[in-house]
Length: 286
Image 1 (cartoon, rainbow, N blue to C red):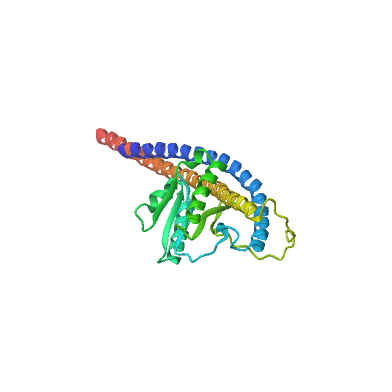
Image 2: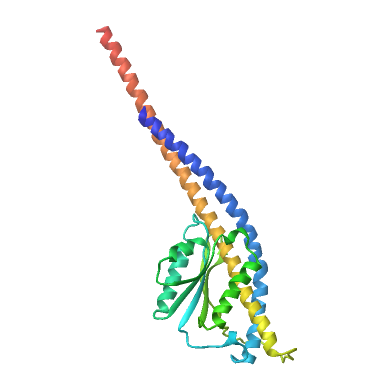
């Protein structure tokens, strides 16, 4: 009977685990829906702002503002968006793999790393990179103020020529089960060539082109960082929802197998007892 007790204890343990994973899936689903709405609402603003800024930057040239200045990339800063917590499938693993590829592509250069999320901080602590900044427990209060703080630190590092190039690495939300790792050059701004003439108009700058560009460029950095935060947060919750759904289904399958094993062991025990009783009865008759 000891074997039956062990199996029953395992079934109870797996059922408790299934309750936890099911609850975590529901929480992640609720967070993901809100995060997805925020992502969809902010994408048009980001895209339109980038179009306007591209048009301005093409006219201004890289000498009009320091954030447009292109110089030899001796040192680079990578702003990496990870999660604070685990249990989200391969969300962080794919990020770290792509970040390691980016570091390898820039071998021989100074690598500075600003990480958003405890998982990235833990993973790269002690690695051959310089930890510039870390922003942990960010998920408690995701907002523009956090993006502004991250952007301000990135701009300061670039303006002081501590670094010559800034990248962001994050998961772009595509669907609940699909995220795409994006490596995006943030600074200096590289104007994109486009065939669209929507913003190809003559501008009258007031008070000056330098002042306007300065304000827009800093705002652009904040918007890009904020969009990366939203994309990463939606992707994290989508990945966690999928991982917890898979764990819940696996727990259900394990419960079915253990229940079958329990019933077989119980039937075998009952059969053994019946045989013992019948054998004892025959012995008494003899």
